Length: 252
Image (tube, rainbow, N blue to C red; front, side, top):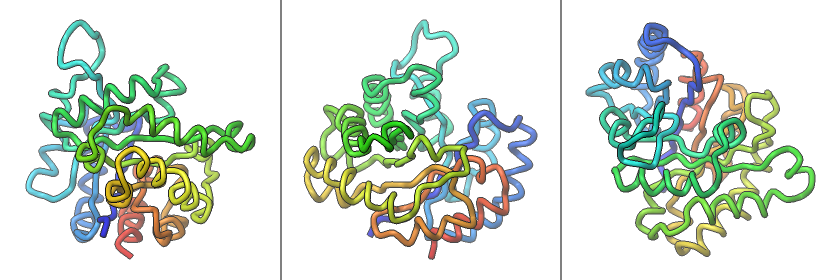
């Protein structure tokens, strides 16, 4: 059985003070749902403060990005070791990073390998654009992102990561894919690609989340699908009560 995982991606929102207030509000509700793996991913500036608040709980902390190099002349970047000081998880390859900051399947692959080498759990984001979806290229794009993003991993490494299927056209638009459509992509594209690369046991073990306009109102639709193991939540993770409801929905 794959344990459900719900991660909140706060994106570029919340000062440290605001982050502390949000976590204080949602912490009691989150702690009550132990059957779901819960992860908060605030901006870098809040990681130290939130790590202190989550200490002693079973709630995980994740960064939203990192560089693949261990150290060096990379102004403005954060290394895997810096992330590991506070976090257990790291979001990699989010479509906003690919669209706005020039990330490619190759750079995502470097980051995935660096995260695993530092005992971080990567949440690897994949997904097609609206144009690609309408052109019937979803399978082609998603399988390529997996093949190139997870290149040169061992089956053991692959089994340790999490995949987030996020159709780009559904992120921040209020236009979510249907649970059935998302499940079909996972069942017919994502798991078969993983199976070809790493074997059927790994393909069955890897958790695949859905992301893209997930709310308390539609979360159960996704979680009821057999191949969807949780969610990477954007805007709704900035509302304490709503995020707790999504986590509760993942518990069944």
